[in-house]
Image (cartoon, rainbow, N blue to C red; front, side, top):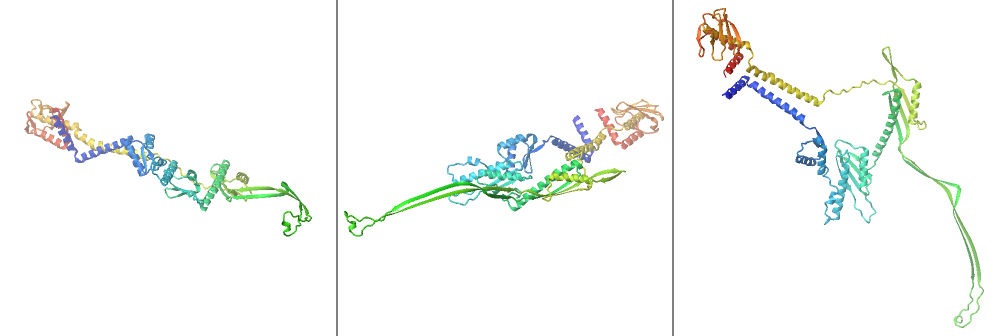
Length: 570
């Protein structure tokens, strides 16, 4: 029975709360639990860091599948995979061991997986080119600023009996994400690719980024040359400006000197070669002499004509006398070498033709009678500064160099001081969380718990004592002669002093044993007496009316007192 009584009391309390307050109670409890859970989850959530960024969808899917198999929590955001920072090195090693990132580009493993049986030379050449392209792409991707890359090679087939030679070419596409490549890095990619392919030159390598920007065309066009010349010129001017400003600020003070340098450079490249001969300084280089002598004698035969001269045994007539000839010649050749001087003069571009320097300095300020006054440098100091600047730049009057120093006050610019905010975004979020929790607790206490406590616990002891006294007075009026009446089990005992006459005093005892004195002047003479069940004797009608009035005026307190009596019975 006690369980049913507890349940009945609980339902009674809920009915007294009302539907509106009960709904507010449920909402407040849910909000409080949700906020506490959110803070607990946020506080226990790990700090995520990126493992790999700039991945393709296929690579993200492979990494996610691997992490799922390892039961590792991860997040995929903006082309990257994020895990707890404490586990980044471990996970990177595991993913690298799987060969997931960059595995879409095949290298020399193509040749390892190739079967030599039945493979034609065409297929072998294509696989060799693909392997070289993949290895070059992997090497380029290993650069810090490159997320991914692709390489295309055009390698013409060699012809045995052809004089025409076609040079190989290459094109490189790099995915940079949000980063950029410097000119030196682009040139390094050019030379690396050219050095990896036989016969390929850096001029035949083209580099393009993922946004379609031409990083290096390999063709040194006129526009590229002009841009390079302007860059060199600006670099020379900047170096002069920085060095002069640092030097002048040591004299005039920080932020009191401004320098502007204009340099004219000669980018013409001239190569001269000259040969100088000295005819006076002759040297015998070679000498050759030859001499010919000839002595010849010639005899003229005198033979008879006819057959007799040809018959053997026949004597022929003697011949006539012969002639002699003698000749002699001499030849001498001497070769002389003339002294010769060969001079080759190469004049590279980038020489300074003229320098124009403008220097603006600010003087000092004096405070006279509370008024700030500008005090410029005198002419002697300006001349010293000018001489110092000329010496620093290597002033050459013949090439038309100019130096101008002007002393003027600078404009006073009010610099905005950036103050770092006291709270950042995370701090505001945390403050908002605690504020919501505080509001929820406040609403829960003052709008839900307090009314419940007010409805369930006795609040006004004076009203309870008054009610008990009225009930005791009613019993006392019924049995004044007996000296006391007990109204029901557990009811307060009432004793009337003075026999119930007007001006007497009645004493009642509350359920907790506290004595209560009630003046008997409230007991009106002539009141009718009423018989009540479970009450020994009679009760005055006026006392009952007074008790009813008190109950009507204070229903909650009366209910609390009656509930206390009932609990006393239990």
